[in-house]
Length: 478
Image (tube, rainbow, N blue to C red; front, side, top):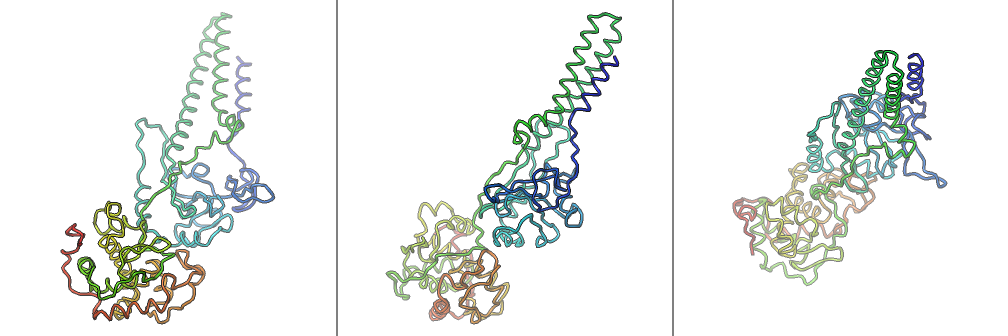
């Protein structure tokens, strides 16, 4: 009996300890293994020097660092940079952060910390401009609150939130549910096997005691006790065994799913927009007046504003396509068609059935974009003269709502002071270093307002019957 107890004690002493010594290397320092880092997380980056992939200490992800019942926190980040764990979130690494996890300060995103200097300023703009993609963020926030309800509940299962990252301009969701469920099943199975093994050992110990000195019963009890101990040893040390075989066998990685979203038209910036009068019709042409009049009812403006802008965009030629692909009366891109029609409450399939060369479809897109331009104009420059507002509308058409928003933010409400140079470095939406007047020259932009006013427009906003808007009637004008 004493010999068996000694064997049990020796085996349990040989089982690897899962409590790792705390390292001394700080966030962002080079490392070779987890034990060197304070965070116990030494992660390979996508940075290579002299043919060697470099690894750095970063913050622990959800599996490496988890505060019970509060998975959206990071003790690593709070220990390193101050505050409470609840003030920080350790975010999955991405290409722009060299594939290294980084600390987001939930109190002030501008105080977020990275192990290495990020690759591109545009990623920082994305991070600190929380309103960069409001529609996407709102939807993703809704997705984050959805958690699965397993048919078979495993004690200790706590599903964390879906994480989102931006990589190379795309949004990805990291879904942890499967990995967390497998990890919980593994832990539960280990616990269950431990209980079964202990029960077997106790049972066979009693059989040994009650054997009455029978050599056969004692031998059988010893054998089963030994088998139970070996099984328990294998179960408890399985993590270490699998790790030595292949570390990837114990990495329950998140599922990475690309999030496909509609274009956020309010922050749109345009490249390759150009002006032209290929086969231009005279501005006196009445061919599309009915279309303009119908859609002007949707946003309450003088229909001649639409006609004047269309003439400056396309020469009132619905078939024009420039070398980049801008098409039709308002020179729009096909990829923005469905999102615009959806917001106009029109049938998105019209983009395929009629294509954006159709005057009504193209005008619907143009009107919806003008609606986006009017929001920052009225928000920032409500008292500006109507001619200035019309100039700003055309500027938005040529440069995108994002370009208009930044011009208003930086240069304010007098376009006469807007420089014919480039936006300053660090301008949001990747506009830093790009020309302010990109889509149309400065003089041409100012000339558009004069053209519109020359049609007899005296007021931008006029009394309309919104019930005549095609999005209400569902009937496109001919």
